[in-house]
Length: 420
Image (cartoon, rainbow, N blue to C red; front, side, top):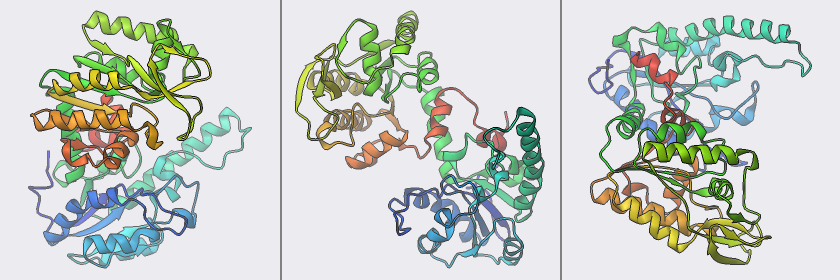
């Protein structure tokens, strides 16, 4: 498989799929440029070699052309970060894009307008009436799939090489993230530096494990993490369950959870997962105490109680000090760590302590030689909020992609480059 480090882009045009889906405020100012910064090593390598780049990305979830999601709003910042005046094409497959891409000189860069302005990028029909029949839906889907081929071929025609550096969209079989790779042979398609690091980090956690291997899974719902938990039960030594889904497991075991978040229709599932863990010899770890509140508010009255003795009218919003010690002891003895999901409502400052303690324990374990991967939007937000990002081995930029990889699924964006 071709690698970006070994490839010389001199005199070549590269179509680089990045993930510039960054948050903007009401005045279109970028509030977090992490994703843009993450793509810079790849873009700068190509330009430094004497190549030129055609940059493709999406922004938001537009249902057509809309100024709110135009990539022109980030053009200035991308130019500043790249150190060159990046050109802009106001239609990713329009005549202007074709002309500007064709005219690109070595060292130059072109940013295409939002790829998702076209339904063909995602391959999903738009504008169907709510009462559309199955036949109408089928016809519309077939039509957009047919036009998707032309859309993809047009994007591919701009460049000599294809570089995928958008791990955050690698779980989508979209035109620019997977289908386009078919227009380039194995020597002319590759991962960017970011994508390469993401794939290696995930594979190390799942396939190249130093033990003990501990996963910390947070989140509000068991139902959203079923496949992840089931896959991890085949790999980990310890599985720490945290966040809101704790209380579904607690109630399933007969505990009293007050007004805490709970999926009452998943109690049997929780018991089934516990049995599977026991059968596989996995140490399934739950909170033993909780920081509770009499309202879902940062300013609510709080107390600490046993996790299975939460009184009516109160709800668990974070783990308690005994649980912090329990989790930290397991984490610090681990050699491989995966953290996905906070221990509580970390958005409220009064309920950040548990997540911070987990993060600090992971940092200490990492200092002692453990490999630690942090992924998922809330976990990443945690380590950034607490200033711990530099203390872990790797912080993933991919939310859905990381979760699907942990579930054991093959990611279309990875398969398109690597093949299986």
